[in-house]
Amino acid sequence: MNKQIKSVLKSLLFPLISIIISIFVAVFFVIWAKQYPITEYFTALGDLFSIIWKGSFSTKRNTLTTLTYVTPLIFTGVANAIAFKCGLFNIGVEGQFIMGMVAGAVIGLIPGLNPVTHTILIVLGGIIIGAIWGGIPGFLKAKFGINEVVNTIMMNYIGMYFANWIVKKSIFAAPGKSSTPLIQESARLMRLSSISKANISIFIAVVFAILIYFLIWKTTVGYEIRGVGINPDASEYGGISVAKNMVLAMVLSGAIAGIGGATHVAGVRYQCQDFMAFTNFGFDGIAVALLAKSNPIGCIASAVLFGALKSSATLLQLNAIPKEIVFLIQSIIIIFVATDYIIKYFADKRKKGEVTNG
Image 1 (cartoon, one colour):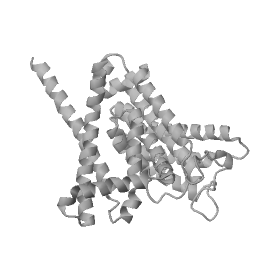
Image 2 (tube, rainbow, N blue to C red; image 1 turned 180 degrees about the vertical axis):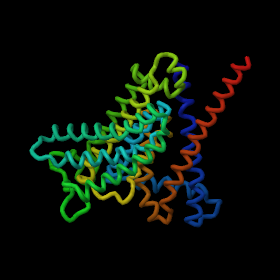
Image 3 (spheres, rainbow, N blue to C red; image 1 turned 135 degrees about the horizontal axis):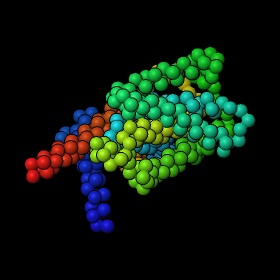
Image 4 (cartoon, rainbow, N blue to C red; image 1 turned 30 degrees about the vertical axis):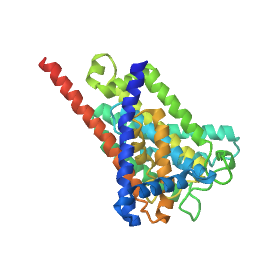
């Protein structure tokens, strides 16, 4: 038991250090923006923490608004975490999230359904389209060895332009608008309060994060996925199908991202609008998963941090602090978490060399 506690604490060390260092560096930009003398470093630090807190959790409205950012980040963080566990880099979570939004917008237009049935159909629609969108690059990787990074990037653009065709040119487009019509009342997820768009999809996100954690860590399927991620050659030798698990990991990753997109439409947007750019929830999910060390439960806490930063961006700007400081903090966190992976890579390589020489 003590060993398990030590292992957990050790795994949390680098993420915590990365957060502390990112805040430490960000304060210098606050000093520069507010024209403080360097001697007032701690005043600037207090300003930064105070504004982030005020912008994200100081009032009920701000807290609920933060939840609208946290929810999709949990989905995309968990989606990325699944792929990471299998040794894959699913850059296509963004496209899978967008396709989920399309599914939610289209299924949400079906009339005559009760709210429970409609919600289930929307979630299933997100699962199916996300799984397909993730499964295609997964299959190409497993069958032909084609790099999943290249494939998923391409699928992002295909997904975005396909979504734009749906909202502009298809039978689902609203006449005279670059969007789908508003979804049916029965398709709209119940909101937590009338003062915000935060809704019950936050609970759906947490439930799926827990389910994926159980799948990855407590089942044979998860064991095989993790085994392929750690050492595909040894897994193949042990009778585990590397190809099957690569496809499965990408399908699961896409499915979770698809649910995130579908519930984002059903709970927040109520329609799918023209995509002039990516939503960036999928890309931010990479940072969420990295900070959580690919732990689905850890993705919940990680998403809260990044959601709070996103929610406070406007207030930072109103206080003469560039909102880009949010991206700076995120970037530094990613750099330091990635450093941990690099250190582990070279440490493992050195151990292998010692075993070989021995």
